Length: 460
Image (cartoon, rainbow, N blue to C red; front, side, top):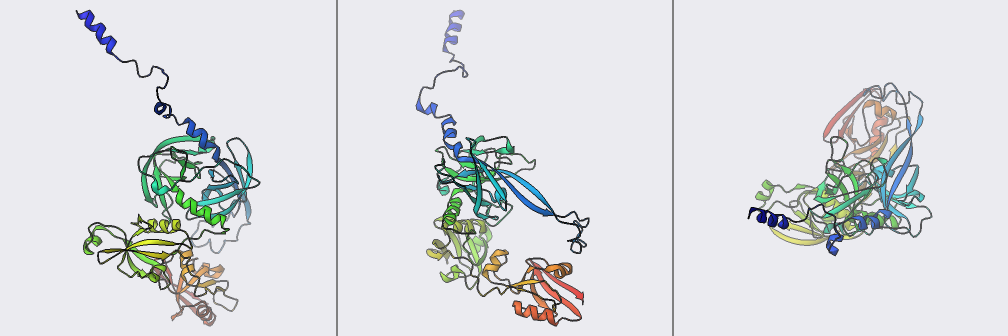
């Protein structure tokens, strides 16, 4: 009796899970990533870039005081820097996207395909803050490419593959999922356009510029950074969304020499829970406007201080990074549909996506030998200058583009704002130049550096 029962139990045990067997359905066959990898990897390239930099071996280079006096102390020596990264072919005629930190300012760029073909390349459009660059391969035709997917349709939990050249070991594929969306600043040094897709697919040094693809082989992002304490992948990687890549491609094909980012011309802050309660909102959402520049396209569209920017083109915005990203995707020269909350009511308004106006004229001037600070380069403040230096829209005074040798020794830095010279307010470069000529015995400069007010003094 007992023996019969044991035989029945043994017969009832299923075959071991590791027993090899032929896949029984198309679903089981498709569980392998091999067909997807074969399809996508030919369009992912390795990039080798060189740049020549000038370096000086001054013994005072780390001294905060003497380095300005001895900046030309040692002879300049050219030094070659090499960088290694990845890229993605976006069109058969050789248009490639990569990271700016891989190819930016490179003097020699070599692109190697997975089949070992090599091409020289030039950067046709790049932006350091967005960390994207578009390359054109020389004499390239009929190359494999990856299609772009609408990155706004990506959802947390989707399976993804990261393809690149980590540590220079050769083309490598890692798998994971989309672990987060709308990550701001974490992967790009906190820059204003830092808006990322987060993934746990392993990304390591050398993966920069590589592809993050979905299970259909479409590009959803360009791998750009990792969050790590050890230098290796800890399961938190960041990719620049494909929709921003698409706008870079559009501007590159239109012949742009630099990436055009629409200018909002507003100041504001995210709506937190306490602000939402004070405004009578059910949920904290959007950005509340505290000030508008007179030339702001939002002011032109009828926005006022106290209004809340809730959505741009149907997508929620809860931080400055999100709003700038949505405006960049909308595209310079177009208009975006912006949802405004005012007095508890929502209204959608068309806002023009314009470049920051270079008006009034910046009237850049360099002070001469008669000046108390010869060689000082100054510009009038206007929206274009404010955008270049990431200044608040309320900034006033005269901008220091280059302090020159004497201004540097006094303590001035590029981006400082001159507010007054020897007790006289200055609002234009002409006023600042005249005040520096009139200074004969002593010099006192009132300046602003970020949120810090400075007074710099010298005897002449």
